Length: 83
Image 1 (cartoon, rainbow, N blue to C red):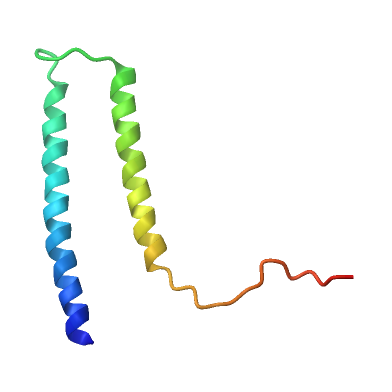
Image 2 (tube, rainbow, N blue to C red):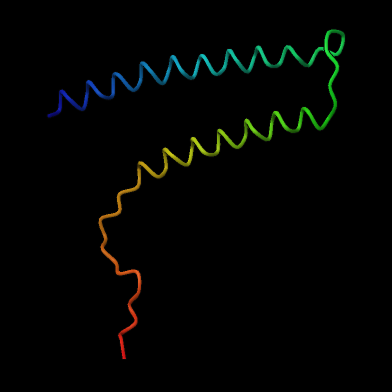
């Protein structure tokens, strides 16, 4: 059982590192668009790019938090007694 967990962690670390580096490379590539000598853009366009990136990061972070929650407590949705 421990070996399986270790294998899963090794797989996670390998994929997380590769995917994170790929994202970092894409962000560096995106930053090259900021050169006003080569490109023309307005503040709204820049806002839309970064709003979307922030949303995706927040959504991804939330997925990790949701998947790490251990909710072992049982609770009824409604505890009002029927009359």
